[in-house]
Length: 232
Length: 362
Image 1 (tube, rainbow over the protein chains, first blue to last red):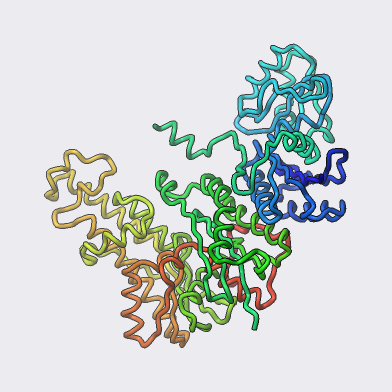
Image 2 (cartoon, rainbow over the protein chains, first blue to last red):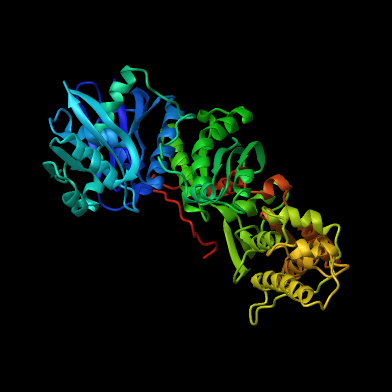
């Protein structure tokens, strides 16, 4: 059972083909933010190089958000179009959960962070227990300081990863009182392989959606809606 | 000859649309999901909200277009999509979906200029219309006067130097309390007003006989409303009794006696229509063409249509404009334009990107 997995939620564009036993192919680009131009050619390439036809896929997995609104929509419109034509389910994977899976099975706590600007992060807190991902703080849009408080309260060693860990490195170093490390670059960014790994679990649990129903998980309202609600 | 079927997608602003068009002229389906009520809450299109709605609607609208046309994806010859100009977030949704659909269905992809689409709407409504002809393109985002020399080939004669005509409508509508969208609302109200009640300026651009400027007439309306308020407050004019309850921005309460909101709408509209029609007819004469077309959302405006019809008749010109459903943003027009591109061998690869400021005829 092969699936195609995609992550276009951040600066990295990543695509992968995998099955239950192997990551057959994965391409990641962390060059320029031109997902609109690169994503479909990357999908074409990874399918071609793994000798996979769209027709033989069992599903399409996507990092459903949070992340860059535009990046999420480029991914969403692409998987929707593919899923519509191939008549495939879409498996929507939380971006931050997938990022934690870069360290699948690790013993420290995992704190993946995406830079949400304005001193905020999209982040969560995770632990692997007996090889299974345990969500301690579900992915959320929050002030960095609030998430750090929760990390400190647990008092365990933690790995920070994601572009938010780089963007707020100094603040984390100053505010985190527990033993911590920052992930190296090859572990620190969104990977379609990690999205696919979680997606296979979701599929086994029948947690799938469709080309019609799927919408990204923005975790944040538009500026105009926020302002309008503040006025009311 | 075998017919050519094109599946077209359009999402450049706040309408999510898909259509199936046969041979560039025959519309088999034309599905439009409008967000206008949503954006009316904000007094105009909010790009982020528009983009989110496009994501929700793009697949239902596209499958509905195929179903309503009773055409399967396998029978489609090419997938067309608007790739500019427009709101980048909105465009990206249509471009992303169209590329993926074309890729998965193994069909050629044709990227279409939104304005070429508006022009091509005339081919749908007038099966006998062929280039060359002169076309006035007027919408919320565009005001162009162009010579359509051949399919897919046009030469810009004039353009607006500031606001698009439709933009001026929206701004004036807001100022006189009509709200969004301004075009249809002013058009409707203007029917009850006197177009000569207030003389608003008809802007000429020195040295560019076919160019437009609408920020001047818009400012003139705002200045007029302001001056009415000043006069009312200083007691220079008599005013209706309800003035005492007027809010800060409630200009209408300060209008002098005998001048109504409808008069302002009619007078503003007359100034815009005068400029649009006179430039168009002058350009047609200078270019020596007998066929004049209109395109874009403002081409549905009843005053523009009737004045243009009069002037064209007086000058022996033949006037074309699309039915209102093809004037508004729609995908059928994109399918019509794409057909002629496709016939000329124009296709795009999987790197096609949204180009928010895509130029026309340059």
